[in-house]
Length: 143
Image 1 (cartoon, helix red, strand yellow):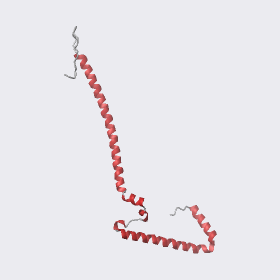
Image 2: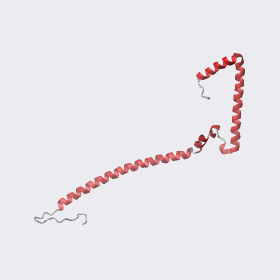
Image 3: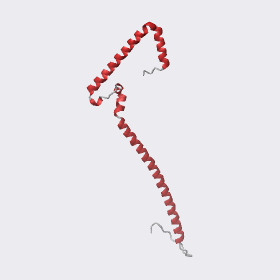
Image 4: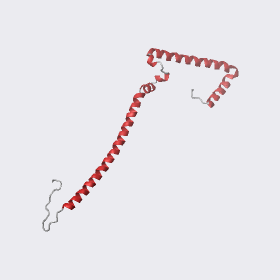
């Protein structure tokens, strides 16, 4: 509760017995309990007063919610979740785009190779074999 573990608690009890003695220790422990209950009541009253003053939408508010960082985190949690979801969707779209780009590049390379092979095959089949006549230069793509 207060960040005190068992070893610290035993050490505090031993120091209390040594400092106050076993006769006065029950009296001081009762006083300490009363102070603790009094401070807790003050905190609860302050919480209730703040809740009543701010309105019904803040009725469930805890005192630790008044810390600016916790207050902002509580009220912006949904927006942050939406931003995280949008970020994941964008990363997924980026991965899909990269995969599609690789597929398109591969298809373009294979189409380029197929056109090159077809052009070479067509060029070798359509060359006329004229004896003594020089082939005139022409652009095969222009026709």
